[in-house]
Length: 298
Image 1 (cartoon, rainbow, N blue to C red):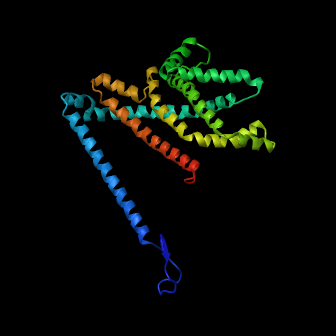
Image 2: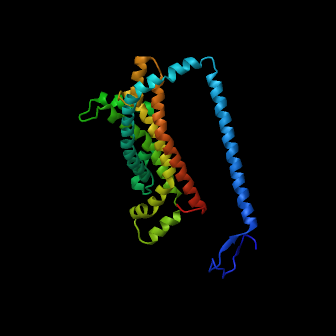
Image 3: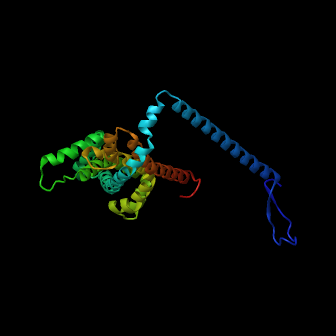
């Protein structure tokens, strides 16, 4: 008997055989539990030591009273919270609207770059130029160019709302990054998948729709979520155009009180949104890795 044994049948309490763990298996499980508790204890103790050391170093520094008054004022926090929270809702609105257009435009650019026919060369060149240019321009500079450049053209029907212009700039910038993510996912699908689809008389469009894209999208979900975590934060850059989002509301309070605690309020709100998204991204990445290595089902 090694890892377990079957209990003899016929006992009054048990009519059928029951699997019983062996002593070696029980000792192994006890050792694993003890090792896990020991690792948890060490990790907890080391974390407490580091946190306490940081708190002591910061709070005993000569400038701490001034920093506490300027950045951690409870009165300024309570006063700024309603306005900053109302502005943060605008950040969420900008993020949600931009995300939809980014996914659509990024996927279209990636599909255009995958066209192989010579007749589509101008479209492919335009897609390459688009990704190169808008990935090379800093997002905040693109917001300035779009936010102030489009109204300056005085075109009939051109948008003038700063929120709309900020969304356009974010879509142009992040679509270039998302297009490359989609393109990497499409190229990660093995060529045999396309060959098998074509052998079943599927057209190029049907192959992409029913065979390639479902696999590609599943592979790139974690990196896409990483891009959207960054988009959540960079929606604050729209404040340079004047909309009363979280950062702009914090700036107004700082200008009136000369206290920087409202910036802390805005930072905490962004953290409360991005951290769960980041952890969800890590979870999906781990699940995809387990599926690829055969360690579990997705």
